[in-house]
Image (cartoon, rainbow, N blue to C red; front, side, top):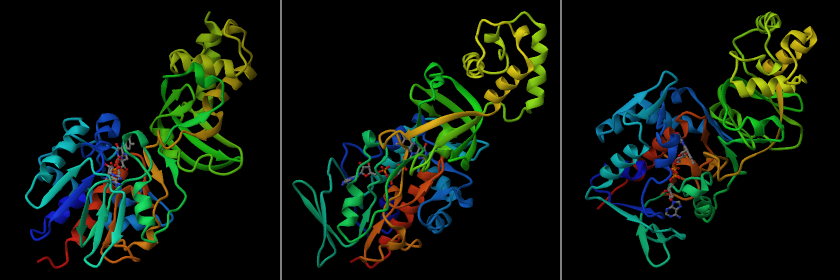
Length: 393
Ligand SMILES: Cc1cc2nc3c(=O)[nH]c(=O)nc-3n(C[C@H](O)[C@H](O)[C@H](O)COP(=O)(O)OP(=O)(O)OC[C@H]3O[C@@H](n4cnc5c(N)ncnc54)[C@H](O)[C@@H]3O)c2cc1C
């Protein structure tokens, strides 16, 4: 949609937008838990990954978060930025973003065709022939904006990779990113639904590979929530022992916590309430049990070394990781079409002139917090603008 709108700014260009689903922006309307985190004000500083993480820079510079928000404002969308830099529609509804784009597409030099799945694309003398199940279209410039494999139920598919492979492009290994992680730690089941703040560190064979702070959500199969999405990229990819080390009181030192627990020995509380008032009740109980302390013991009976073990569980819980959830659950695909085969300034293929690609289909994935949609807008706008730059009769 961003590419089509940018291309249509050349009044001589006629744009045909082909969408295989019944309506445009289906995935978009599910983003940000229905709120659509459409940009991040810090995207110019980085936050992108792939074989060449610098590839995204040119497009983000050319069409920055500020320009993106101005563009949306011109289309009628009010937005609001959180302190973290995450930007949401003022209405807090992802559908508002889809709607303003839909309305903007309604212009004389754009033809929107939904329910049309591009099955094949061929290079022809005039340009390209784009074939669907029953009909085909020709064009002199072609932009592949088919997205990635993540979010399969919302339309994620292999389609874009296949179309571009047909032109000789290559695909790197595809992995789910911004995704929940499975754990066989037996405490997870009884914590299902609990949310808590923590510092999380991923370790592979004892060496730290990623860390972040923020909200964690326990699920029946393991761990989820923004802090986990942040560090889920490449987890359990490759051999080794994968662990997540959690500190549930990152801003409180061990000594402070230990002193408070010792103070509680002067009360008549049972061990199951040892961490009451400090952590979520259920989490407190599970951590006390993890430290090897039976619920029905009195706090007064706990030895110093037992309290130390509780502090260990609160400040340094190690949860074994088995694998990430699959592409169905992932928000974005890590990996994609090799970016070295595209010019980052124009998004044009280096292999096939007049062929462009943008968005998630390329080997670019961003951090959690609006970076992926910013990449989609920026790369889409750059592709559309350059595709329509040529001569039109
Ligand atoms: C649940 C979920 C929540 C997310 N939340 C956020 C968020 O809050 N912030 C953020 O920045 N990112 C978020 N993302 C990631 C973000 O949505 C994607 O990275 C982004 O939508 C990619 O844009 P795109 O245009 O490349 O692909 P898409 O948005 O996937 O659009 C590609 C379109 O092409 C169509 N298509 C594919 N193949 C064909 C074909 N052969 N013929 C015709 N049409 C075709 C698809 O149906 C689709 O409509 C989320 C993703 C998911 C799954």
